[in-house]
Image 1 (cartoon, rainbow, N blue to C red):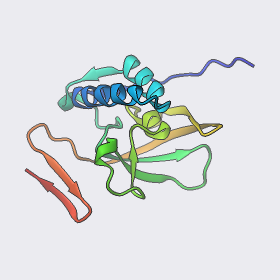
Image 2 (image 1 turned 180 degrees about the horizontal axis):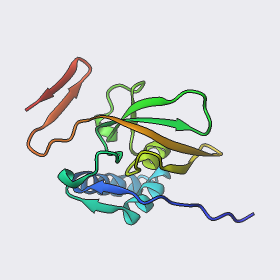
Image 3 (image 1 turned 90 degrees about the vertical axis):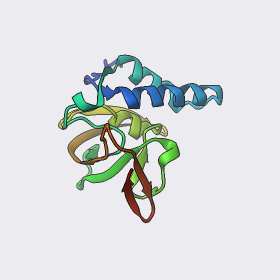
Length: 148
């Protein structure tokens, strides 16, 4: 059966777009399969200035509340760049299939992704804290978060 996959529109801030484009180029040199999915998503994304990113859109450095398939409970994790991953139990790298699927979605959107040999679907239920401020630098460490 050849089913068409519905792709919801996605929006990405320029700072995420530029950083992720560099990341994906490095990953492709190392033949990382997840980089193809991320590159496809970057190609179809609407890119905007960070200050214009709607509050209901998933970006890196934001806490996203989501549900995979029809799980009984929601999950909540911080979406981060792979080199910023410090709390694996509380964070998701944007370069994983789940992280890439979440990137740029709006609350209520659904997106399919491949998890091993299974096709899964993630639904965004909410956006929590977003560490996005055009004028400051946010540093996260296991002991806390600081702004410079």
